[in-house]
Image (cartoon, rainbow, N blue to C red):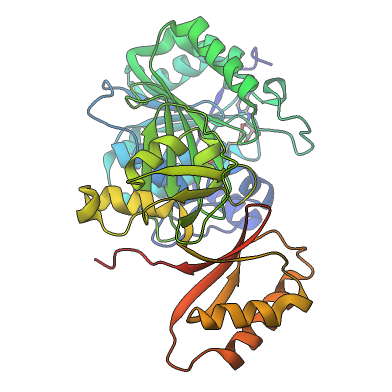
Length: 432
Ligand SMILES: C[S@@+](CC[C@H](N)C(=O)[O-])C[C@H]1O[C@@H](n2cnc3c(N)ncnc32)[C@H](O)[C@@H]1O
């Protein structure tokens, strides 16, 4: 495959007509107009995510030089890095139908931001592991003789990928990185975009590939979540792309706000101690556990005693002797740090009652307990059969509406703890 010489894709009128006919360009929010077929969109990074990730690169730390994406797909992530750092880019794409669209996307992005980087950027149709020919073709075409300072790669995973193993990636990471290592500038930044389902063992294999080529280089594993308690992206940031810590958890909100927490991997331990009335219970984002950063988060978010009641599943539970994250002034932390820590809390409150069952038969009793405690509503925050959950919640809402005092505004929730359920009085966040 690597014997085929790469071909430069020109974003001319003919290519534009072709792209428009098979995948009309669309823009996300205020982003550039981008072409992508349904298949390309399945693999592509959404513009808002691509821009958020690019903003985590520190341009000042990275040596001068160009950006390379040797398996660029739609070119969205490449364009986002180029526009954010104002550096020219090279994209290489193996598919002859995708490569022309990537070239138009890069050109559109350059027109959209009006900066110079795109005039010296090129997309090549070819094999991204064929480093020597790619560089030769690019240099001849643009007369730019700059080395590569940033390498981003998001290898394809076949549709039917079962195991999410490293061998399923196209191109293969070890082959690709060995091919490009001699063409990277000293101090280059690398982002390796991988399957969020990689196991710890597979992550170790990736670490090994990197250390076999670059030795004792700085690396940061980055977990990215867009909410819903799910890891949406897992990537390894290498060299000047790495931060000072080995792990980083990034939360990207719908409005494009980014929060990130950095630290060292630590295992959290669960305590069997019974959850007592008067203690404080917080359901946190399971991504904190997945990224090994739950202990780093706890150090910021809590004061007083704390213990984990559950660390598995969709609702890890932390029990504390004091309410958590009531105000950033009290915790003596910056508002930014407070917002970051709070973005990983699903819900929090004070434990006000124990209940043994949660079903249709027990709803009247639960409602009586809750209204006596001054609660006006109860959200179910536990594992209930999804076919029953909405009906159970509606029935509970109805009962609560009928029995709660008119002026009561205290919200509550029910969750699993101590081999049964607990009712908690919800606590909000610092309104400041
Ligand atoms: C996951 S997609 C990249 C998506 C991209 N980050 C985006 O934002 O659209 C991976 C791409 O790599 C391409 N690919 C696979 N093997 C390749 C190779 N040897 N050389 C170049 N591209 C390759 C696939 O055709 C696919 O378009």
